[in-house]
Length: 89
Image (cartoon, rainbow, N blue to C red; front, side):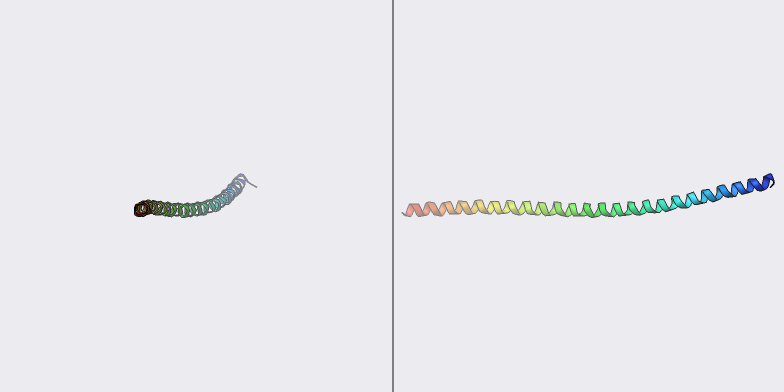
């Protein structure tokens, strides 16, 4: 074989190797892109769930506060009736 044919074969072989490596990198890039998309979707799901949980906790805290106020009003009214009953006796 002459030198130019050998050089052409070498370059063709190197080009083939680079093409295979590039295809492998593209496949890995696709896999990583899919993983990233999955992780972003999972993050958004968890983030939205946490926002909803926070809103539910706030609503529950408000309800508990309202119920405590109602209990205090009920206890005050009960104490007033108890005083009135004792005065009647």
